[in-house]
Every structure is written in structure tokens, then in C-alpha cells.
Picture (cartoon, one colour):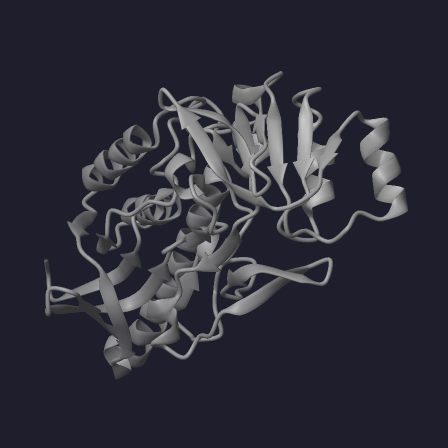
Length: 315
């Protein structure tokens, strides 16, 4: 690594690599620091990414890394533990190796963590037959027996949504609020069964989901289960700069946290941008990649303005 870069990108997923590619093509010195812990690692394929449909996540990242390197961008394995203001030099970025580098600008694309319901079997099957996004996985489980695990206010909404992909949808009440009369009519009209009581765990046979075990001992056969994680931004680096995460509230319920930014990804700290899931909980891979490009262009523009001002002052 060099001692100083125009931009250090923290996180090497689709948002980070797209931002780095944009900046490297703008002839900026760029360093990407990636911990190698992508959110979508459990998933077999990327979906809804035009011309990349069905690509394994690791293959997409490998191709992106090669493209960034092809334009002179540098990529290192590691974790950024903190970032500190460094006056005219911008920021000092501290790595878990004990070393540090200087960066005129920061692009933080650290993503989020899916905090799953604490039910036996859920974490083990996550990204395989335990799912949350119908637009990411609905086609793959179409016409299968789908169960929706009720843990919050959106349980009924989830069940009605997943009904688009299968006629066999069961809502497990578990710890979700009792459906209203209007919601019960909606569920009934769509042929969605509601199973009362709490879930004890998921049953697996031959490395496939077999069903949902109730605390009563009853086993309800299901081929896929839908859950609602809490989406928590990986914001430690940003917190070290004074940027605290904001709670995302929907229908009066906190569903996660994110770091606020303007449409270009610029945060309240001058010189710091964010892109991807750390700033947008709903961003799929293609949206995160687009946000990285957007932030990269904005960062490049800010560096151009600074270079021009410096040149005028020197003249």
C-alpha cells in the first residue's frame, strides 16, 4: 500500500467495487479495504441484475475486483477499525493490521448485518430455504409450500406478498401481533392458512427443510420459510467519525438502522460518502452497485473542485 490515496473505499462488495471502478477510471488513486464478509455469501446466486442474472455472488465480486485492478485500483484484505480526521490530509484510516493510510476522501460501503430470529434452524438454513426477499428468491421457490414466520407487524404483509409466488402459503402466528379482522379476511380470501401458537424450530431432513415444528409438537411440512430480519448497518467506521446510525421505522416498528446521506451518498461529515446497504436497507445488488457509481462520481467532482482551488491559490 501507498501512504496516501485520493480515496479509500471501506468494503469491497458491489457498492464499494463500483465506486472504486468509477474513481479509478477517473484517474484517482484508490484503495479498497475488504474484510471478505459479504452479506450475500450464503446465497447461491445474484438475481435482478441485468445481464448478470444467476451469477454466484463470489464470481461477481471476483470479476469486479479484476476490473478495478485493471484500471490501477488497489485491493487489500483487512478491516478498517477506525477513521480519524487528519487536517489537510483528509483522514487517517486505521487497519486491523496496525497500519494506517491517509485518504483525501472516504467511501464507506460496509453493508449491513441480518439479525435473524433466534429459532433453531433459521441461521443454519439462511439464504438457502430460509429467505426474506421475494424479489431475490421468490422465483426459485415458486409453487412450493412456503411458511411465513410471524415476528412483527409485517407478518400479514409478507404472507400476502409471497402469495404471488405460490398458492400454498401458511402464516405461522408465532410472536406477531394478532391479525385484525380486515387482515383475516384478506388472508382467507387469498387462501392463506394461519397456524396459531409459537414455533419451536425448523426440521431438516437430507439437507433440505422438512417443516416447521410447533411448541405443541406438531410438524407442519414446508419447503421454504420466510423470516423478517432486523437490518443493522455495519457502521463502526462511521461511528468513529461521529456519524451515528438512524433507526429505520416502518408502520411504527423499527426494522433496522442506516446511516443518513444525501442523494449522492454524502454524509454530514465533509469528505465522507456512503453507498449500498449501510445507507439503504432495501438496496439489492444492482441498486447498491448503482449507488457506488453515483457516490464515486460525486467524490471525483469534489476532488476536482479541491484541485482547482489549490491550483488557483498556488498561482
